[in-house]
Amino acid sequence: MRHRHLVIIVVAAALVLAACQPPQPTTGPGSAEHYIATSVEVYERGEQTAADSTKVTWFVPDVLADGTSAPVVVYLHGFSAGLPALYRGHIDHLALQGNIVIFPAYNTASLVNDLDQNVMVDRIIANVDAALGELGAVADTSQLFVYGHSAGAAFGSVWEANGGIAPRGLVLAHPSIDLSAVPVPVDITPVDFTAEAPATTGPVVLLTGDDDTIAAPAEAVELHGYLTGVPSRQVWEARSDDTMYPPVAATHTAPLALPGAADTLDWRFGWSALDQMMAGSVRPVFDLGEWSDGTPVLAPVLLAD
Image 1 (cartoon, rainbow, N blue to C red):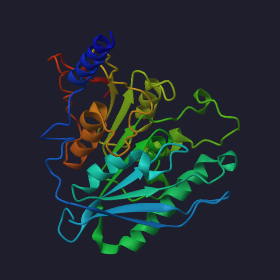
Image 2 (cartoon, one colour):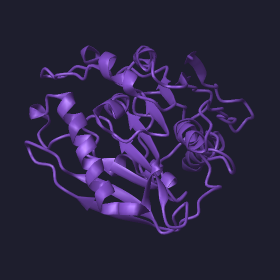
Image 3 (cartoon, rainbow, N blue to C red):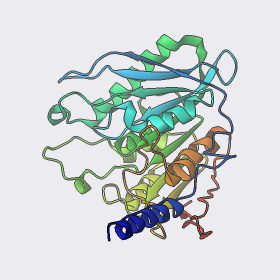
């Protein structure tokens, strides 16, 4: 009986390993094809106190994309998700391609006292400026891109209106602009996205997921409508797919990528969109690959154009 149980466990484990999501692509967007660096140096300045945050972290590869300088990605985290480790998989993916990544922490150490989104945006601008001052000419701000997740995606849409350097392009994942949809114990003063988002001038790709219950796809579509000053904009919705295990989960936390924990929606959706934007493709093409039995993973759908 004991041997039978062991056989069942081994067979079950083999089936789980055999049935898996598509791997990281070997070439093209989201792949490691264009990794040129072998290590990434991490720098930090400032601090988070109960009243303010001057903390900013930046990541510099040992080989720069343009030899002596590199494009810059301003990476805007979700509300209360100000630890770079939560996104380190994506950050390393960008840096290993020779890019500099700047990660400003816009929340204070006391979230219950952090009640004004406009102040958070001011911190983003100030903290990124501080990092750029430290970096000097090595940071090529003529090739600056903005990536954001959740509240960070929403703040990315008003980056330029608040004095941020005009970006070459923006990828805004799961933007959270409707505070009434998020249960919070305090009243937060919101950014006026209707007034400020139209100042954005670079092409924008907005990403969302059909199982996002924190920032519904309708919020991405709404923000799309405010971005009237951009040359192009789309909203793409990833779709959850439980054909096999582990399932593809198009939830609000999908963009989080701890080191070694990236999955299909990272490589083939979020990372792919930014890779394509940085390569000059403002209208991404997505290939989510196939499950291990050859069944295609459900493709993203275009919600707004």
